[in-house]
Image 1 (cartoon, helix red, strand yellow):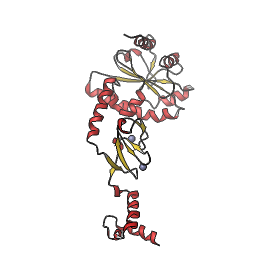
Image 2 (cartoon, helix red, strand yellow; image 1 turned 60 degrees about the vertical axis):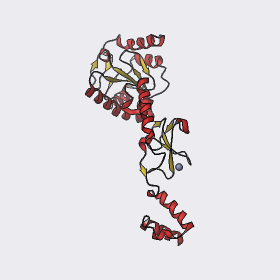
Image 3 (cartoon, helix red, strand yellow; image 1 turned 45 degrees about the horizontal axis):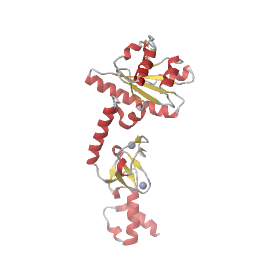
Image 4 (cartoon, helix red, strand yellow; image 1 turned 45 degrees about the vertical axis):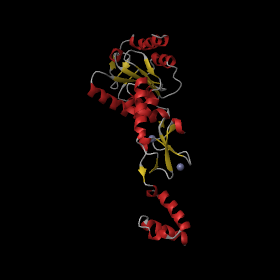
Length: 271
Ligand SMILES: [Zn+2]
Ligand SMILES: [Zn+2]
């Protein structure tokens, strides 16, 4: 056991040495013992922080899917404990009322000790602790954003497995494609071929590894967010086609594919 592991155990003992420290959603106190043997997420958050308010609903749906998955599987359990940085009891109460998990009571001194111990720099932050009480990762938030419920149990082995699966799946993806939300052609890139960590322009979530990137303007989306369209299927595509054809020939008027839109569009240009 490394020194950091011992310290982590101590951080959890700091909680577990006290009885009835965790508060349940319906305001009933539950003993910290109930967390023993579970994978636990310490969720540092506060109602007045915009990224927190944005992240919490996502965490709730991922939490519910993980719980359901584990229930079907049996034998393992997952819990989240809200570690509030809210400025007053009423903010805490209204924010916590939206959450389906546990919380440390508002103003509990353990809140400060945990934030200091885990060196929490900003909210929201999700620290994952394993069933053995050791820290698994401080990147819980990123892993939820990247992999949703598949991130569970948040271990290095699980992340490697997911990355491998993504690599495999990428092999069958088209090299380039048009996306319903963008006018230019997008090219499949990976970290090795011009990609890297990015924010998806379609869902606003972060991504890494494989992505579809517009080489013209930098628009980038997750492969899972692609809604493939035929190049001429978008309005932008048709317009470009009209301009191009207008400059080249007048065959556009007989094109059955473009139909009414292009005829009126070209008419308006000619008038
Ligand atoms: Zn996306
Ligand atoms: Zn573009």
